Length: 271
DNA sequence: ACATTGACCTGGGAGC
DNA sequence: TGCTCCCAGGTCAATG
Image (cartoon, rainbow, N blue to C red; front, top):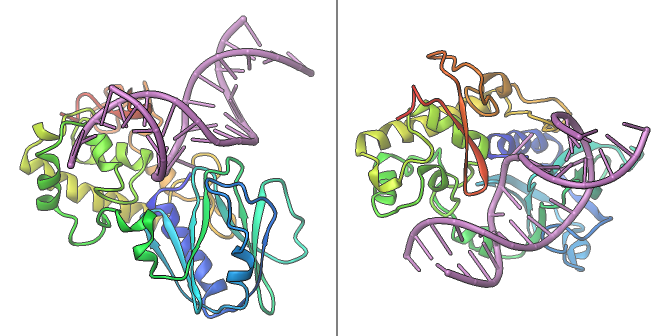
């Protein structure tokens, strides 16, 4: 479900409820997520104070006085704040109970998400260590992009969704970014010129910042911590708009499949 | 080293 | 109504 703007929205939403609070206990009802939640998770987490909540790519890092909880929402993960007497629904796999009051509940029908614990620096965790640069970091720019693309033969779409190159861009925003940059998704990386990297780097930042500002994209079921949808959905230029008119030129948006995922683009506006 | 494919899951919608 | 098929916002691990 969530890409970088949605994860950022979730991180901002949970901060007021979790920051500087102490975890009373962790309740795991279903351990079978992408990786089985470790048997010692409850014991490792309990009693620690939450000192920071940050994001790295699509990972949520809940840093505590004793270590870090690493959460990934996968395709269908949702975090919501509720109380202890809120009825537990289907697919409500994990609760963090806060000392005093309040519960953060993890809901994930498809169970592609992950809950992991590390006592070390989460930046050194095997899933995070190899990750590429943050797209909103100044280190992500035209020079970096050009250096990456000029040696590769894959499509530009698969490159910008490759978390080892740049973290946090998924299937929706890839289409939107490529439209904003006027670059077709199936273009070979090594055929792309430097001036197009300038457009691409700018489009990455503009599209993601805009989406964050609007609270992310809700296609089916994404909501923020209070159950509110994201308003970037109305801003989508190409994603999900096959055979509809391009807002710029009136031509028909096309859908193509690249590495088993749908991509949408305007054949007239993108080259 | 790079590129592609399979695998992991459930639910919703289209089509019959 | 109900069945089957296809699709879905992710990405690691295995393979070529």
